[in-house]
Amino acid sequence: MSTRKGTVRLSLAVCLSAVLLIGVGCVPSAQPVAPTAASAAAPVQSAAAVTWKMAVNNSPQTNKGEQERVLADLINKKTNGKIKVEIFYDGAIGAERTAMEGTLQKAVQIGLASSANYSAIVPMFAALDLPFLIPNGVDGVAKFMNGPAIKDLQAASEKVGLKTFSFQWEGHRHLWTTKKEVKTPADLKGLKLRTTPSKLEGGYVTGFGANPSVVDFGETYLALKQGVVDGLFIAYSSIVQYKMTDAVRYINEMAVVPIIANYAMNLEEFNKLPAELQQQVLDAGNEATTQAIELGKKADLEFKETVKKEGIKVFEPTAADLKAWMDLAPAVYEKFPEVASKEWMAKAQASAK
Image (cartoon, rainbow, N blue to C red; front, top):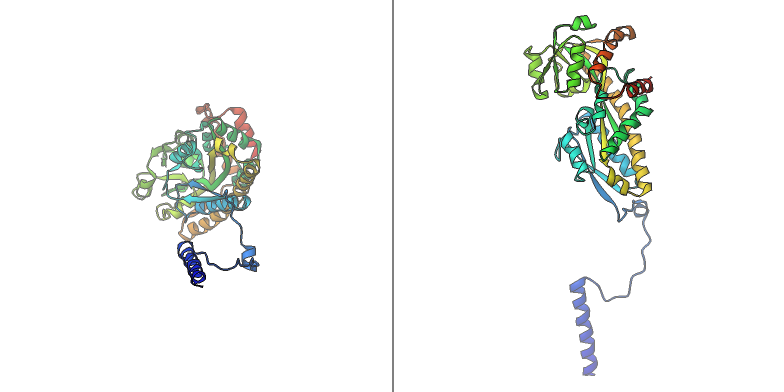
């Protein structure tokens, strides 16, 4: 009898130890519990799910930030949660050029850069900053994005090891002035315009009859207010979001250059993805480009209303008004023959019509 009691005590002790050590009770196995409606509807995260880093140089509150979130959400949706994109704003892991360098080095999965900055890596992208290369405003941009010329730019990216798979549109560079309304090239003659260090921008400012003056963006507001410069080519979004509406009085909606940025991945890393995931990422990129143009168009209309309320006079040029400016563009193209061939430029212009 004592032996039997000892055996029972020993069994209980072993069981108690198991409970304390690993949380397993000495009870019969429970029957499987049927899932609730909520748990059955919950998405199942794949064991192979990964998180990609996207490096951008703008804040999340801008219209660019909205476009970036659209792309991130579409990649997550199209890949059924297998790829989640985390956006690092305000240059947290690299500004535009350094973001692309990080993408080449596989430290960043998606980089975003404007055509001006991206052209330091893929020179052909500088062509997007030629005046009136892509005519017909936002409608021309939408057609260009779906035309044959854009594929040549993507092919040029692949030659340096980058996969350009989506685009962002922030609006167009229009002509803003502080004291004088400018409708024709003759009106612009002799005025001093703020430019970036871009030789192309300085080239068309000179070609239009003005004097270029390189001013850092952070100093542009004071340069306008103090009369150091008389105006600049810039988008509605920059004037409104960076609170420069009280520094300018006139705008000519010339739409001289579309502000296009592109998202790129490391080509080798892209090619490692299964074919299905590759297509899903490309589909997300194409859809994000389409939405970016619509979001940019909506934002531009809102910014325009803000500008009008601030008392800025808006001049909407007719086709005849624009022709006087567009006739000056070919001379600018001739100054930069290294940017793109005449054949490609003709293809780009035709695809936007």
